[in-house]
Image (cartoon, rainbow, N blue to C red):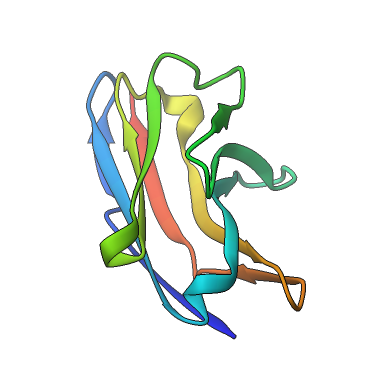
Length: 117
């Protein structure tokens, strides 16, 4: 089992920045992928960015060049640095980790990000 605690959401003006954090506890040695998803009102949850245990990252096309995912293995924490925020980035952002042996899929409670125009 893995528990996730997110922080860092809030209200920001367009063009501003926010950094989200997600601290994991429990069976963290079994994590092989960490990521961030988001869900806007009336829309499906979508992948924003993810990073593997090897440090390989990938991003949704809509955030490439603006968002950066990183991790601190010593703190079992994954971050999402969000720059040049746009109103269309407004959503609830969810941290996600996937584990192996056994396979698992864990979600944080979600944190609201609101970008005003």
